[in-house]
Length: 199
Image (tube, rainbow, N blue to C red; front, side, top):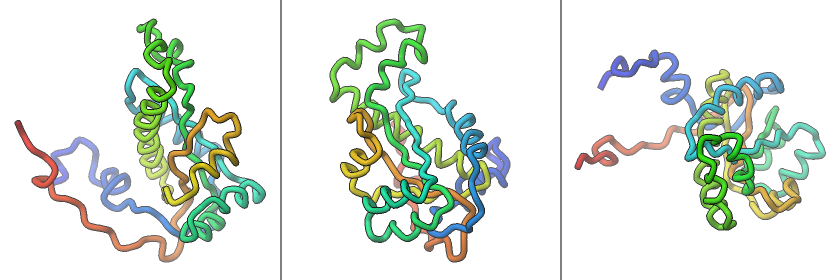
């Protein structure tokens, strides 16, 4: 299949997917709050169930906060996170249902679907993961590289950064311009026929 089947131009396809990689090193060029806000203002429009918006982003900028985070990461993730120009903790707010009257106003009963905590947690995890994916694509759209990680002590990060007990970490993402030897070899992907069936 040729890339011209898609409406999105080839350069954008490459930027967002084919040439984009998980970065493991970064330059020291800073990432500004304005860049992150522009990323959010784009990706907030990604679809979720009932327009749920459970994603919460904590930008780790200070040396003190970086040290607090790094201690909860797996050994292989510590050095690159300590050196990244910006790290974002992506988490979900398990009380997202309180916002449904605002973000899903045409269905007055929406909030009542999530009165039980396990139901909220499951929905927040799924929709938060969707939003995390959009966030990573948004980082790429900004001309930056993302280094998402899940090698960490989730309970430790939750206690360290979300003391209210209402948030759950989804991923930790290093963000910046890719540095020297930033990429590991690309791993294989499954072929179309291995994934897609028609019924």
